[in-house]
Amino acid sequence: MPITRRAFLRAHGAAMALPFLPSVALGAAGPVKPDKKLVMMYVPNGMVRRAFFPGEENEELPGFIGGFNADKIKDKKRIVNKPGVYPIQLTPTLRPLAKLTNDVTLVTGLDRTYKNGQDVHAQGASCYLTSVSPEQAADKGMRYPNGRSLDQVIGDKVGHKTIFKTLEISCNGFKAPKEDIYFDNISWYGPGRIAPSIKNPRKLYQRLFMADSYRQHVGDVTDLILADAKDLSGKLDAHDRRTMDEFMHMVRAVEVRIDKLEQRLKGASIKEPTDADLPRGEYIQLMGDMMILALQMGITNICTFMVGPERWDAPLMYEGVFPKPVQHHNMTHNQKGDGWKELQKIDAFHMRQYAYILSRMKQVKEADGSSLLDNAVVTYGAGLGDGATHQYFDLPLIVSGRAQGAIKQGRFVQCKSGTLNSNMWLTVAKLMGLETEQYADSTGLISELWA
Image (cartoon, rainbow, N blue to C red; front, side):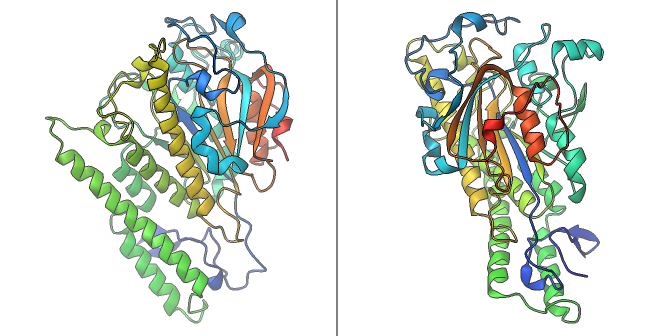
């Protein structure tokens, strides 16, 4: 039987997945077509509009609007889009994507409906991928519009090929909850049924690779492949040896980085160190690299990735940006004067992490020679259009990846102002192979995204 990318070899009783190795895939009719992948990245507390949205550089700075007043300024403050497709513009927050402009598309004009009664930050995160309207929630007897999230719906369709139908990752290192679950999760099995995310790097490593001795397992499996000359080719060609070397280097690097971060916490000059004291960039990139390994190895094809939780008033260390930990949420409420300039540094910091993950996905080669990014849809956005006003209109969104040629990249798509973001999620579902004409409160596809 030919070995495919989905063939799981067993060593010491544990199922092990390896990168696809063409030279041992006997009987294959040709290059195996990779599966499509989906990554949905979420950033908290909105973004500084004037540094993200083209054309808003000199707009009025927002004042704080609290309580349940989401959308209060919608009619007065909206910048009305001129629908169409334009050349991409690298605003200050988008500049980290300068080397990836042909791989990303900026999409503006997307709105979400809002149901009064739930904190605006909580609903921003928990309903980001559900997009259930207040009317639909009322019809179904939902307390909040927290339905089944898009990643789970897509996982039901395409997730059966992999070990995990979906993978949920969060870069929230706080062990003790500071807010309830609605602030800290974007993936849901259904109303009130959380799809729990993994936050601890070592736990994610163990979940994906099953044991601390995974590296030895991989070595044992490789030895079995090389030794079994009757059923397999008996040797790896130069390309596959290079693939295995790169793969093993990535696994070893992950182990070293986990140890380094844990040692840093042990040496911290605080009484009760927590993962929240980890340098944010190292933490996010480490979790991102493990996610990429999982996608490369066929452990999962669908992943949600929370860069941080909503609100969560606690200091975080944005290394290389501020000399000491700062509170992101509090900064969003103080954008007047030069306050927005300090806040925008966090937006740019997060964008650098997105650029890092895209660059890594672009480097990873699939069985047919295409890149992981060529076969993926990678979205990056927030559940709030702005953290000071808590607005649910003009949500920031970037779409990367080519979905195997289905997406034309390197553009700026201005949707008609008021376009529902569920239209985008319906479009993503179709790109991932779902045969459906409706998702949540969607009214149609965003056809401009298609090649």
